[in-house]
Length: 335
Figure 1: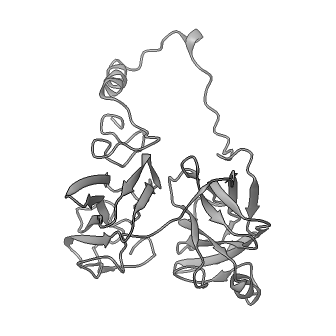
Figure 2: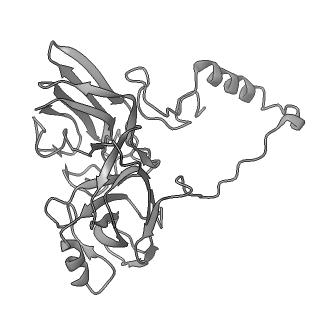
Figure 3: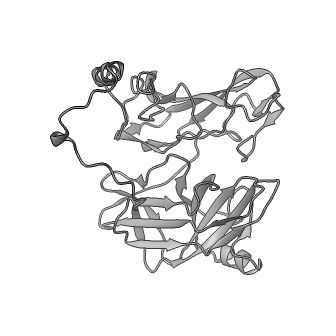
């Protein structure tokens, strides 16, 4: 049943809209074989040909990282509100590096909603951390440091983030790695100790890339604000004019429980449409930074478009509110 409805293996993007790298997709023939086997009550084959049972060890995806560092153990307090806690990791960059792969290993997957990884070359994050007697410091909407570049993202279902061959995210000498961890409201005390693993690229000739929120819910939304009254379904749009020649290597849609679909595409000069990603059935529990099979070149003057639909009615089984409540833009899962 799960495979026939394409719920397993989990792969939210529509592969017919844009075929992406590392797809977890079964062919129709494979689905039919599984269905026929299930309808026959799952007959056992020749067990001499059976593979060994899989072992789920929780091992790191980056088995031998060039750098591995984790935050101090943090006792998450009981709270009726979401908590955004920033931690300066005990690792300072000794020389310029390019990040080839970045893995976030949540210390407590039951309570880590998402993790944003920044680099800070100003020392301000250290000062904010020192001013708080507990590990880390609280800050909403970033790490409280101006111009601290975002270098990594983790949300539920995300694998290790990787860059194409010959490209990397620059990590500057003397920078502090700082993570912002979102902990949802909880009525039980919890412990977290999230870790970051890094694999570096060869710096010689590596092309620098970065993470840019080109289509977003604040600055490029064209029909905002992002507000969904109870018992309504609304679709919002974003638009961004690309100011110079650009190459994009991946795309990372993100939303919460009230979202039901999300799509992004580009229109190049000459009116050619370039599909980027389409997630027709949004699933908060499976999100990712989806890598293109090949980097996509966008000439100057290309226009990026995004659209997302939100269902704030009782018909949305993922609606966190019963009955539906007024939902606004925000970082909490219920926003």
